Length: 309
Ligand SMILES: NC(=O)c1ccc[n+]([C@@H]2O[C@H](COP(=O)([O-])OP(=O)(O)OC[C@H]3O[C@@H](n4cnc5c(N)ncnc54)[C@H](OP(=O)(O)O)[C@@H]3O)[C@@H](O)[C@H]2O)c1
Image 1: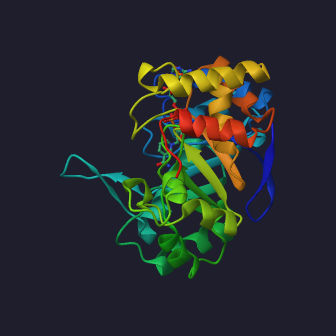
Image 2: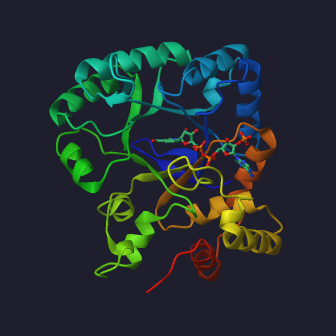
């Protein structure tokens, strides 16, 4: 496993993070087992969010049934996605009141006295940076949250927030996989007249690298927006063939290669894996065992059906 120096404390946090969006059907004991498998594989980081149904509560119960487990884990949660009371949809809320309430509730659910990293989950159009800064300062002063970051934000949003925040934005959690590459497509096709050249993200990867923030990739094995897993999907035959060939060369699995591909970007990259199976957690941890060559990286990008100018 490789580790990055995360945030203001330079905590040693694994490049692979255990995501817990899909653990709703698990018992607390099974969640504790999954976390233990992750720790044994070198993964010391767990990501959750209040919007992931019972996830925070299950993690809290897992901590309660395994004394000492909480202290071995670097714990990240988020806030700001709320079910709308009247419309069947979520909406976004970065108000002072919601930030404070959400963190109190997360601490209770997670049965912990502090959160290592807190992310603003999805941008709230009505966000007022001064209000967010006040909430973050109070949470930090009370020892309830160590580091603060964002998710799904572009550089313009982060710049606006950073102008008011008393701390650096330590992480941005964004979607990236070998089969979901709009950030790279726009990069390669800069100043071209084709659709791939349309920049939708405003340079998220470059901004993250420039500001030394962790860039946490979510859905590293999915295509589209929760379109499904591309591993073994015949619509992605070329990609699967490349991943298998590279895996064979390195004595590893296509899963590990796909995650290694995401981690290869030269910045503080992390990959959040969403598997609920211990064996796949181990396979994911093996993603850090070697560094992909340029030829391998470009082979994966091209075999996913992308064209380079
Ligand atoms: N910030 C955000 O907006 C945001 C959005 C989405 C997710 N996230 C975070 O990112 C984490 C990961 O997201 P994700 O769950 O979408 O990521 P993922 O790791 O790409 O997908 C996990 C899913 O893929 C399945 N899977 C894994 N390997 C497979 C294989 N070899 N063959 C077939 N199926 C396989 C898993 O099933 P098994 O359980 O059976 O292995 C699981 O259902 C989440 O837990 C959450 O923490 C953040």
